[in-house]
Amino acid sequence: MNRNKSTNTKQIIDGVTLNLTKPDKSEPNWIGQDEVLKQIHACWLVLSENDHPLSPRITGMPGTGKTTLAMVAAKQRKQPLYIFQCTSDTRPEDLLITPVLSEKGSISYHASPLVCAMLTGGVCILDEGNRMNEKSWASLAPLFDHRRYVESIIAGIQIHAHKDFRACVTMNNDESTFEIPDYILSRIQPTLQMNMPSYEDELEILRYHLPFSEEELLIMTVEFLQKSHQLDLNFSPRDGIHILQYAIKRLSQDSDHPISKDQAWKESVCKVLGDEALDLDSLAVKNQRSLHDQHIPMGLGDFFFSDDNPLHPDSDK
Image 1 (cartoon, helix red, strand yellow):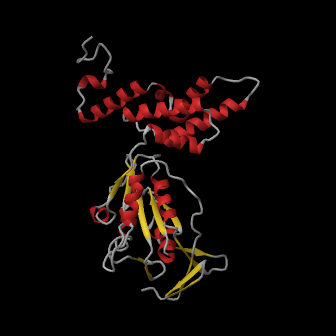
Image 2 (cartoon, helix red, strand yellow):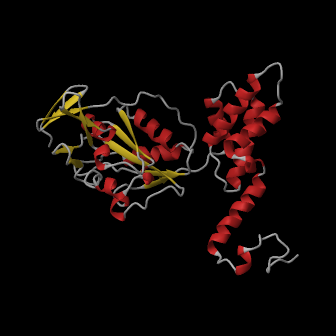
Image 3 (cartoon, rainbow, N blue to C red):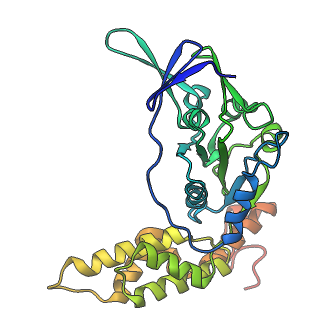
């Protein structure tokens, strides 16, 4: 175990002083999909001395509230919350301990949010873990099994997790991912899937974030989002919040030359999601065609003519 002394801002482990960061102080709210919230709490239970908590991965499309869900779960446990934002550039030392050289030439060691959570008995969310490379993940292998420790080569110390330490990983279901090796995936289990919200939940989410929005704009946005979900376009509640924010700002901008709600809303959709988003049906057809084309070898005519060109060899026109 760690041989350490601690204060609120520092911990000494085997003679090495670690500077700690402050936990997240935000107070998030959660709306809908209560079952997934219960599943996170189940993962973090410890039922006997021979048991250890699970570190689930929460998956879903960007903007569906995966991070917020994990934050709410942590706050409900009344434990310090730390969030580490994973990126493609994350190095093992970023995940654990970073050395900082002072102007006087001395080196101080700064603990990452993950290590701070380990030492203080907090909860750490590894956010967008799908963006992190295998080398960084490998440094966490012993943490996410029964051993529950990490080793910092930089500081030359082994750090054991506090018995109350809990963790989870959020991952996006999109193309911006590294292939996470099986020996890591087998450690961050189970997989908890976040779905798109229902009509009622999505409306309540937008009302919560934008209580000053007119009901008409809220309804327009929710109906737009719900149709996009049905068409597998995966525009998220976060997209809806941004659409509403921009539309409301445009409506309040110039009282002498007001624009209509419909005009402001359509402009906002274009600015947030692109012009094609105004016609969801056509966009869905285009996306399906794109997916279809990825699996069908191109013929010679495809290099010279578009699908709807009457000169295309396969055209029915």
